[in-house]
Length: 205
Ligand code: URA
Image (tube, rainbow, N blue to C red; front, side, top):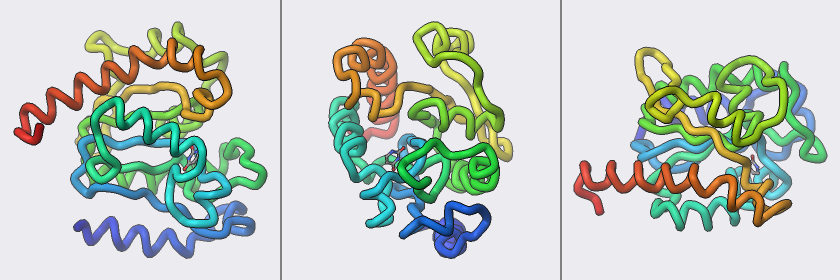
């Protein structure tokens, strides 16, 4: 239970900061543990999420569930949110100003939840965290170039530093399953090893 997070959820349920509020059905706030093992950030709610107000419950969500199963974590051990909380019509990519309006909310969630690891699913999640657009293709070279010496990216909010890993969005797995599997297996193996080490430390294995 986290009263500040609950208050933020209430506040966001009536958000009218950007034009996405005109076409959304429900604001899709983050879901999961308030003491999460890790946090996952996607792009934006799709149609199923918009109707039900829950992140990642459509086809991409089912793919994410199978990946989480491989990693060895359940949804109630982690926290899942998106770069923006409202569905862009026809699932278009969120615009820069829409991302900007939602950034303080993502940062506040990180501040309140203090995840040790944040997994970014795709370009939009990374752009949201960085606050700037990213030029060029997202590929293996891009991932490798981004990573610092200890093999992770890092992000600090209010003195809390989280490790960050960027990987492809689950919708890429749906479009190009074999390629996505090959290219993302090292990412998810790394996350799995990290989760196992954390569970060993916490004695929750
Ligand atoms: N894709 C996302 O990025 N987020 C969701 O919640 C659903 C699909």
